[in-house]
Amino acid sequence: MEVKTQPMYKGKRSRLDKPELLAPAGNLEKLKFAIHYGADAVYIGGQKYGLRSNADNFSFEEMREGVEFARKYGAKVFVATNIYAHNEDLEGIEHYLHKLHEAGIAAIITADPAIIEIAQRIVPEIEVHLSTQQSTLNWQAVKFWKEEGLPRVVLGREVSLKEIAEIKEHVDIEIEAFIHGAMCSSYSGRCVLSNHFTDRDSNRGGCCQSCRWSYDLFEDAPANESWVSEENIEDQASLGSMKPNVTQLPLFQPEDNAFTMGSKDLCMLESIPELIEVGIDSFKIEGRMKSLHYVATVVSAYRQAIDSYMADPEHYVLKPEWVEEINKAANRPLNTGFFYDTPDHEDHIYEPEEKATPYDFAGLVLEYNAENGMAVIQQRNHFKPGQEIEFFGPGGRFFKQLVDKIWDEDGNELDAARHPLQRITLKVDQPISYYDMMRIKR
Image (cartoon, rainbow, N blue to C red; front, side, top):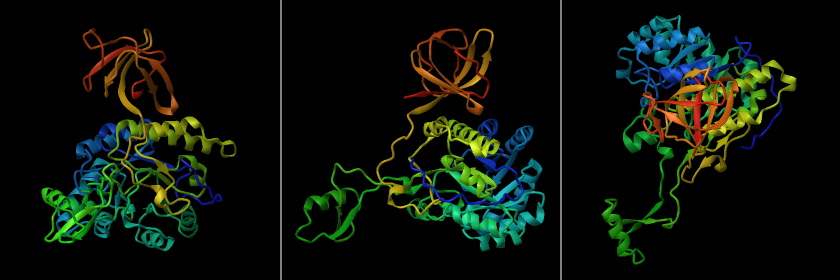
């Protein structure tokens, strides 16, 4: 990934001496791992009012358990309530917000002025953070929301580093910015492709990610033109795509790949000094739908980079292993989004997406016996004796080894770990801990 540079802008954080690392959590397990791997706060979705209806999302009981766990580590839990609400969506919102308060939620992330007003009125103890769905891009808009009583604004992804510096210069308010993860091909998520293609409202939690689909290109042509072959007409009729007296002519060759309209993913790991110095209060990682392995890996890399810079800015050095870790979890090619300049055609993915990382999350450490070096692993992907595996944990702990013998819970030796969530025992070369992970290169 090529990192574009600009002058180092200076800004002041509003309430935090150190930028908050804010991680996604699609379920309770991911919440716990995000915090254990270094997140200062996590954002989750409830059963209603969020934009990730396909995520596992949290019941109120799970929220309470998540908040209790977070508090043990000095972390906070935020809830996304960022739909654009229709009249029927607001039925029950007051009850929902009261339940969030009872669960101990620290803040909601919302875009709809109606939800903002209701929350400020009935649960003033919960902070209201303005969602990126509001596409807030300038300091006067930020000032407006501060005057409305909001302590934090999540900027639109289209804001540059220079514009963030201008916002921090004019308005004393917490600024949250996305620094890693997927980028919407539309404007801060304001998209209706999903609505058009599938009748699933992307602004009410139903986005089907139409921009990631594969497309072919056709041209309408009158069916009675002499240059339109009967074969084309028959092909289109068989597909049920014929319009009256019109055929669709393919503008591609059979060997051509279908194209997509998806953007590359954002990654600002190599720009941590600039992000810190400009005064961003909260570094936000996208990905409530992403895997446990993704969340832990990305959070750990950013945690190490932030802590390293804050400890000694003058001698800070970006470590190659942090970048390598990010690449092991990357789903797509990476870029720096809008931070340094406006993305162009090179920042979109037009070819069929290939899995950027050849690594799979293979197992989760449940137990470790220091006396005999034996570990109990919960299987998360197929592995077998003779393969090389990697163990990693919070703080950058990492080592590789070959799998020797493996056994099931009854002590039977196995030729492979085939079954999801199966408890496997194996000998490890170095000490490991609960919450450590095991991955394998395919």
